[in-house]
Length: 414
Ligand code: AMP
Ligand code: MG
View 1 (tube, rainbow, N blue to C red):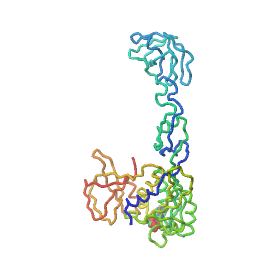
View 2 (view 1 turned 60 degrees about the vertical axis):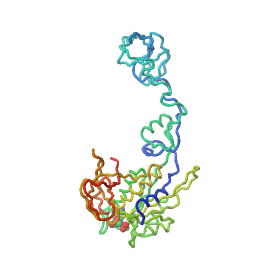
View 3 (view 1 turned 90 degrees about the horizontal axis):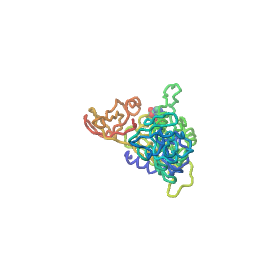
View 4 (view 1 turned 90 degrees about the vertical axis):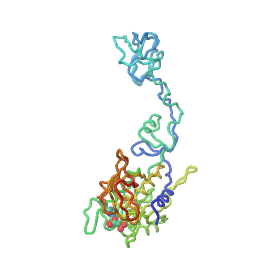
C-alpha cells in the first residue's frame, strides 16, 4: 500500500502538459497558461496622446502660468489634428486624442475659462510634457510583451487584445470523462427504488473537475455488469482523464479494476494508506489522440482514476490526486495546497491510517485556525457541507489539544 506522497509522485510522473492548441480568448481560456511568446504589433500608444480633457498649448506662451489663447481646433478621440498650433494659439483636446503639432503640454479643462473662441489659462504648475503620453511609452512594435508560461488573467486578456492577439497558443484544459458505477445508483432526477440511492458523486465530480480547471463530461451510470461497464468506458476513450466512481473495492461486484485491465490499462497503484479513500485505483493507457510532438516535449499518457464509491472518499481522493493531475496537464503548479493551522478545540480520535477529516479552516489575526466538523465517516457528505478543508490527523491514538498545530488540506480559496 502506497503512502499519499508516494502515490501523488506516481500520478504526477504521468501527468505531462497536454499538446498546445490555438484558442480564442474567452471564458474557457481564462486561467490557462500561455504557450508562446507574444510580441506587440504596434507602438502603444500609437501616437503622442492627451491624458486629460483640456487645451493643447505651448508652455512658452505662459507668463506666470497665465495666457489668453485663440482656440484653433477641437480634437476628439479617434480624430487626427488638422492644424498645427502656433504661438498664441491652443486646440481643445479630449482624453485619448492625438496631440497636434506645435504644442508641448495639455492643460486640464478645470484650469481654463472659455469665452467664445478665446481660452484663458491659469496654471502655475504646468510644465512641458505634462498630460501627454509619448508614443511607445507602454510598448514598442516588436517588443515581447508576454512570455510563454504566463497564466492568463483579465489583465493578460486586455494586453493580448491590445496587441491584436485575440487567439493565442495555450496549454488546453484537459477533458475529463466521468462514469459512476453500481446497480444501486440512479440519476438525481429519479426516485430511488428499494435498495437504491441517487448518485451524489457524479455531479460532485463535475463540479470538482470544473473548479480544478478541467472540462467535465458526464458519461452515465454503468451497471455492475462487465459488458455495460466496458461499453461506457469505450465511449469515453476520447477524454484526457477518465474518472470512475465506485466498484474499486474488494467486493464481488467491484468490476472496475478487472475491466480496465482487460481494456489495456496499466495499473500503477491500487489502495492508499489513507482514510477515507483507501481503495483508489490509478492507471494509464496510451493517449486518446496521439499527435506529432514539438521537439523536447513528451506526450503524457491518458490518466484513469478509479475513485472510491463513498462520497467523501471520492471527494478527498479527487482533491489529493486528480486535481494535481489536472493542473499538471495544464502546466500549472499542481499542489495540493496544505497550510499549518492551530486547532481551536480538543480533538481525540483513533485511526489506523492518516485521516483527512472535514474541517473549517479560517484565517484570523493570530494566523490559520482549524476546527474539525461533526462527521461520521466516508459516506457522510452532509458533514462536509460546513467544511472548507480537510485536517490531516496522523495515524494512531491521539488526543489533540486546542492550540496544537496540524496540517490542513485546503480545497477552497475563499
Ligand atoms: P462501491 O465501492 O461501489 O462498493 O461503493 C461504496 C459505497 O459508495 C456504496 O455504499 C455505494 O452505494 C456508494 N456509492 C457508489 N457510487 C456512488 C455514487 N455515485 N454516489 C453516491 N454513493 C455512491
Ligand atoms: Mg459498487
